[in-house]
Image 1 (cartoon, rainbow, N blue to C red):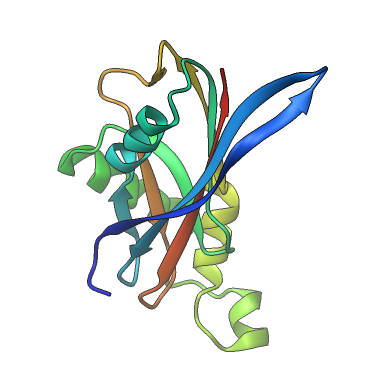
Image 2 (tube, rainbow, N blue to C red; image 1 turned 135 degrees about the vertical axis):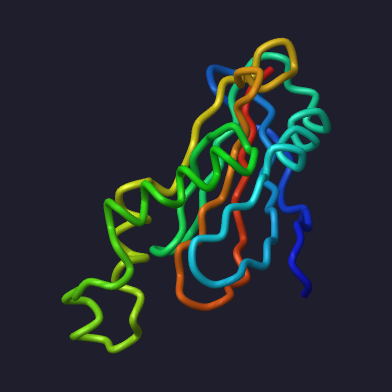
Length: 160
């Protein structure tokens, strides 16, 4: 798979609460990343899934399985992205000793620390059928691993 984003359909049904059905859907975004700190804008794909869900008021949860990647929001432009990468490098440098590397020998101890600090999920309100993001706020995947990866991001949408 070349670098890009693919949507994979999963489930779409409802859950009963107090006799009322609350629609939800689960889909996946498939992304191939590069090594190092790869930053991928997921906003257009998540917006598309929110529109398809027809949810007017609710929320979307985005989750990245794995311990060397995370999700956050940022203004997705080269200056802000480069500033974020430099800040992350200052906080958890790639080239210092990590006990994880000594134990497993895989050289990605820094990636585990970075992902743990940034977190694996985001929860965004949906208001009037749209994610309640700021004007310049985009949802991004940060893959810190020291090798290319195929990532499968979980998107769950709930609401009315």
